[in-house]
Amino acid sequence: MSKVTLAMPSGIGDVSWALSRLWSVRDQIACVEIADGYPRRTHQLFDLLPEWHHKYEQHFYQMILGFEAANGMSVDNGDDPRWSTVRDAGYERFMLEPNRWLELGRPLAGWLSDIPPDDTYYHYPMVVTDDHRARAHKLLAPAKASGKPTIGISCASYRGSEAWRTWGRAEWTACLERLIAEGWHPVLVGGTWDDLTSAVYDTLVDAHGDDVVTSVVARTHYGEVVEMLRVFDAYLGYSSGLNVTRTVLNRPTMALWPQCDVVDQGALSTSWAPPHMQEWETGRYVARTWRPLDDVWPTIKRFLRTCSDEIGRTLEPPCK
Image (tube, rainbow, N blue to C red):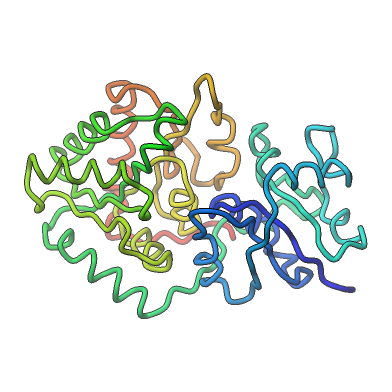
């Protein structure tokens, strides 16, 4: 049987969701083509997945949806997406995405329904190099020197904040000041484009000095970020590939998702995540939609207690 090349969306989170379901059939996949476009970082995830071949190609999300609609894979048309449809279509290249399925609130383990639900690899392995680890720990040394538990923070960009009606500089700064008052050391993470995250860091340093907060924004390869996500005692951020990766590592995660007049990701916020991390007794993955800080803060405090209870422990995932 010949292998098929899969054309997928561009984001780390989008690709990660697909990989979780496709992991058990990876020997049937020749290559993953990533939709090309700024900021072009998803290849760094594949750098940590030596079994997977990848490249960038010039396609875009609406093309994928159109291809699916023409080939019996569109949930908007009432189709039941199946791996056998991809495998048996006879195409060398097949476009697909799990996003629309998840946006309808359907669990990830049900996408590509002929792959057994138990073959959902929520915690697939990523190979981080010794150099990634060394560089990550060097960047985190100032935070570790504080003696306080660390919490990774992503505020994303001004562009993203404005588009999705999320917190701006003032709200994020107020949130981090509360975290600092609770005894946590925030570490701000992101790429060169995450100018809001950098602005929040600058505001805190101007007000309190650089011993209460650390920034690694625009200083990391994704392999280094993965190591940081592994060692942070907690993580809170704007919905992105960072919070998805943190759950792949089976580490406690809280993400804020948009739900406003321009976009509603309330259903998506939980449909993709590992079910065992969402049980109310543990709350190791917590999703909230963007609301004023005073409304969200009680949830953040409960989440921080969960993270504090986990410090010094290594929890093995109860599933793949």
